[in-house]
Amino acid sequence: MNQELICYNTDGSRIIGNALKVVFPENVGEVKKVIFNNQNIVPRGSGSNFVGGCIPNNSIVVDMKKMNKVSFENGKVYAESGVTMKELNEKLKSINLEFPVFSNEERTIGGMIAMNSNGYLGRYGNIKDWIEEVELVNGKGEIVKIGKTDLSDICGMEGTTGIITKARLKTIYLQKRSASIFQAETLEDIWSIARRLKQQEDVVMLRFYSKSVSKLMGFSEKYHLFVGFNSEKGKIKGEDYNNILKTIKKEYYYLSAQGYYDAEDVKFFFDKIKEFVSYLDELKVLYFSDLSSSSVYIFFIDGINKKNVLKMIQKMGGRPGSYGIGIKRKNILDNIQKKIIQRIKSRHDPYGKINQGKLIDFVTGAKEKNWSKRETNNEVKEERSIEKDTGKIKEIYSEEGFVEEKLENSKEDLKIEKKLIEKNDELIENEDLIKEPAIKYEEFEIVTESGAGKVKISDNLQRKAIISESEKDLINKIMFNKLDNPKKNTEKKESKNIQNNDD
Image (cartoon, rainbow, N blue to C red; front, side, top):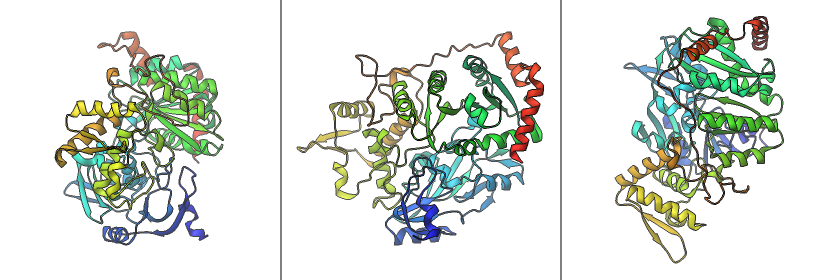
């Protein structure tokens, strides 16, 4: 085996594939040439994907790291897909700007767009919200530009519709931020303050760590809530703030150093997270959470307790998070989702050249009409419910039992897809719209409410228009770290430990 190709045979998922060749295009013309001349192509950024999103299968790997230019044209910021988060924000800092959806510094813009990733400052949302336009070379070798209205064809499609070459980004002025750290022995204490801080406009980060993960990161063995502000309300400022942020950015390294390579992520309603992480604590499973985006990141060694955790996710109606689908989680997609992806990919990559085997098993050409066989009557009923919603899908059942789908015209096709994508991508807050668990794991027994066969989800948060004075006092104490005065010396000691770790 060619030693130079070994690192390209895998990614953050640790699944092993086979790269036939690696190419390093330096401009969009070279990307176009690669697509014209090859049939099995895998685009790659930093290779940090946890679900096998850039695993090659006797493929040509297209490493985009040489396309790493950042340019400023007519007051707009353009970044090539190989630019890393660190490179981008260093360039922007020189003109007093920043791109706020940042995560691992080595992650690339192209990879984050493909996954529709979020960042450490969860209040800023996903990268899709910060893109004006994406340039890519599709599977037909065409250089196309995708605007805001069609970004769902690219963001979250995990590199299956084309190779992203450049993006026009929104930015903000460089912010002076601060942070506070809240320690607690119980989840109740964490949630009582996090619920209110989540509603504060200048709170941009609510990073929550379990007791075990806190200990791995060099803190005391307690629950820790890191609160980030777009202001100077927090006690931790300046270089101390930068050091805290560096520690947070190393969270995955602390876990992987102890052998926690296998990771899952899930999204819940805010108050559902407390119930879920309580269950994880009982199992002694390691996790941390971004409470701003209502995501939980779970880590395993040798699959211990993983089946139990996945069953609980299914039972509680959890939805996939920012890790995506890739190879590992293809079985959680239902037929509606598969059909949406099939249609989108058919438009951009009709020959199935790019990132084969990811998201779905794509079917090309004449076989497409029979690609999705209905396995149960429930799935057909689900199709009919969508027909009622849109009034545009017509179903024809052949003698072989397959379902063909015909649309009135291509414009209506796009409208329907956008509507379905919105239903599947967003965390719907109306409990009446959620009829089934969002994640289905084929290898595990389906757990549902007795009789109904459905999981009902509700947000139990009691919202108040006016916050009481006692609640305001509590929030102010947390913002300025005044709740735990007797432990100031301990906090100083931990701060020194953080500094030493970073050094």
